[in-house]
Picture 1 (tube, rainbow, N blue to C red):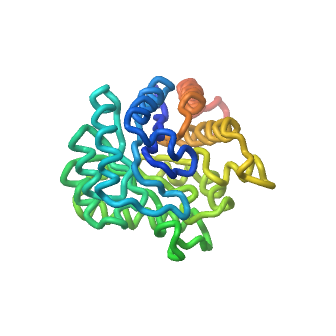
Picture 2: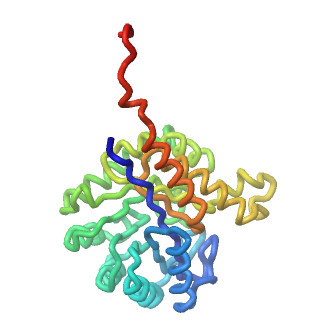
Picture 3: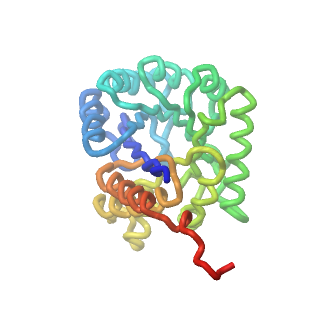
Length: 286
């Protein structure tokens, strides 16, 4: 039987002063490049480089500043052999990043923030992550109301898939992200995680990005989520990585790759030895 492909590990590299988890740590280009190499050494298969925070209440940076933050870092890491995704909502930033060696566009707005993004993905034949998005998190339009969060997120993702294909994006280049933490409360996030099989069955690669998000902190420290230890959040993230890998996710996006890489390897090893689906039916049973 074929060996199941191991879920990939996408390491987070925020070249920002204000990201929710590690803002400011890697804002300097040299520090960012060094951390990118550390992520690779720790088990990351892909480095996701972003120059703009998407945390609730964050203020957008201008395009020139976003380019200044990410392009030199992507250039150096790509030269070192890293597979890079660029975390951006701007088509011009995506183009500049692909030009210096990025491979994947990771757009948390799924092309809604910049209407030319999907055309860029098509013209440059780049894989593109389409995340479920209901608007910027500092705006009331980023609605948290759902009657059926799983069904509605899937339906809204299908609309973005159709739009991408309509402008020429190859279906095989579409990667879906259910958008944990974006216009969703903790209950919504857990419901989505419980239904990952449904997202994995949408005929496109699935990316799960839960790392260190507030709903994890709330689980670990209900009285005051800010008191949740980073190491504990990473352990919880690794558990979610295992669940994602078991569901068939293509990749998980994490801040700390080591434990999630181990989790993905374990799930892949178990899947390799799972003979249940191929086992012959016992004689005498219908």
